[in-house]
Amino acid sequence: MESLLIAQYDLVRSARGVLLAYCATMAPADFTAPISAFNHTSIRDLLVHCAATYQHWLVNVALGQSWPLPDAAAVPDIAALGQLYAQTDTLVTDFLEHFRGQWHTELSLRVPRRSEPVQLTPLALFTHVLTHEFHHKGQVLSMSRQLGYVPVDTDVIRT
Image (cartoon, rainbow, N blue to C red; front, side):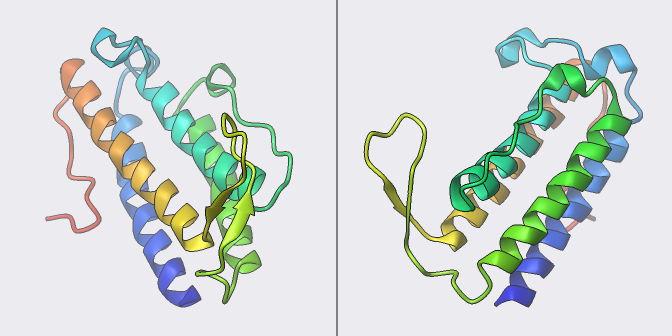
């Protein structure tokens, strides 16, 4: 199963790579411009949020480590965002290695804003962060369209 999850994450990374390459074609001011229809968040802010979500759920919650979440203001451009995602890839690799063979094991985890521990499996956590990224990837493409760009195909299966 580990090889399947690694292969799945490689597909996610490939789609993300296309998205980041597309974002690199944007004017820097557009990359960080707040968009009113998206609660005044920027493309950069949303992509940093996605990386932070991987770090929060897989490292801080599942592994019980205290990893500082990234601040969007500390990610000024697409190059810095690429470095953030390289770090995120390492954290995902660590998570996958840590839970090798334990994908269906229920973990009792402390989750913010919950008074009682929540029962979650490593597979559920991994699925959550992947689907979360793809949800926001679609929003990033919509945001870019509002800024006047023509989105590229960033699906896992690209035509």
